[in-house]
Image (cartoon, rainbow, N blue to C red):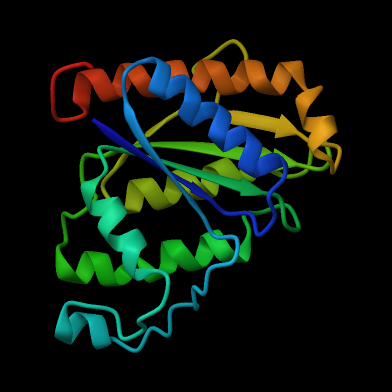
Length: 199
């Protein structure tokens, strides 16, 4: 089974590191993974022009095109975001909004896939849980199955505290515990509902 990890940070720092850690843990469990960073990419916002409803494709031909293909191929999707004003990054929101074209091409394109969220904040309470809820809402609206880390420590998902540095993130033992719990639950759901035998 294939997992696609989308990093919603324009920087190669804490969020990038956390997502790659999650993907590495999944590779150890036998999953195929692919990492897609928004860093350096040209992904414009959705124009809501309805071109996709008539033509079954997006009018914009930018770096979102390969993401469409990755999402269609994936059994599981991880979206990771830094906190921008207590919410997900504009780059990640653009990806979500542009998937309107994916739904116009095939209404069930993401239905049944398993979804996980990672949120990294410069403050311990920087909006991580709200960002995870925003990602989970996107999954629900797309017909996906959102997965948390479960009770006793990772109720909504992976919440990490970077103190605005990569070094600070690496010190966040509790944050990485939530990441591991969420990855483990994500793996369980993939094996049970991910469209194939367990790896």
